[in-house]
Image (cartoon, rainbow, N blue to C red; front, side, top):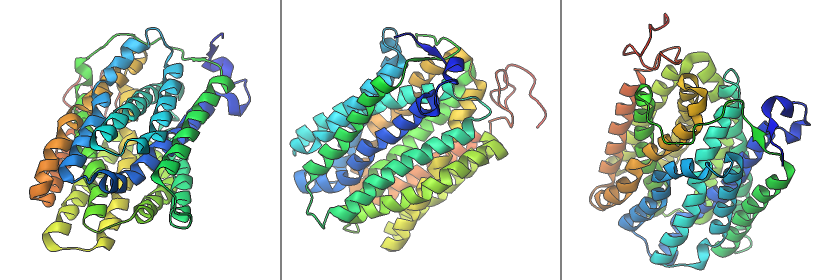
Length: 409
């Protein structure tokens, strides 16, 4: 099939354009991944009697493919990024569908590794395609809408779980098979519905590490470390400490999704209005305060209502992370986007390989200490965000002088 340029694709009906494919993928991925996440803590506790250390090891295994995301560079030497993204989505869907077939520590770790390969390779390629296919001027708002679309898809999935889990006495196996199967089917359909699209700038198909991207790499590393603590331990706390059942933890996720559907486009607008530096500084300071409050739940015995509220606020702050994408889009050479997306994804997951397992042992001693560590990481990120220029561009990557005179701020 002949590839279609982005310019020629603008003559297609709206539903067959590149942006429509990005929306389809943004909808398909969360159906499997968010359902897996919503049921995970209850499933591993009930099926395999996981404790804090076990859940830490599970997430360490889950993040290994993210650490190896640099392998995407080798694959795109012989496979188009668009094709790889859809293949990865199918793999995520199939692995999710099989999750409940192996209710043991070894089985759960193995199937988690397979689903994680699909998830992380999809995310790497998806970020690259977004930055290549979306114009810089429209990127903050459009990325916000893509986040909202994913939130909408997850909202439907969570809503169905909340309404049907107890009412129809659903099993983990049925829910995992339906959600994973639907993701795989949507990805497969996209193979036949959409042509291959060519971005205007060919991508380098080799690993690159550029000195001028150092601040972006550092921010990615810290973002990965912080995210792991939240993803691994915030939800686990709700189940272990407060006894949330499947429909209750899913209801909490549901509230998050409703909020994000409306907030994510506003976050994109905020990035366009206030710039990457200001929005990232706001995000990181907010996250530091939230993590300190999480620690207070264990220090002072604060209740479930505060914990649930913090969980929602946490998600709102994380939506601002799209500013990190647009910061890189503004400073990157056009041909660097795909290889740097893979390298950045690997950097993002360096801490993820050892942090969940290590902090899992700390959790057994002091859960509040885990959240103190997260607050400290957020403050380090705040310090790094101070170095982002008001108007980032090639040659003006940081406020430390960069490689060219900085524009007036």
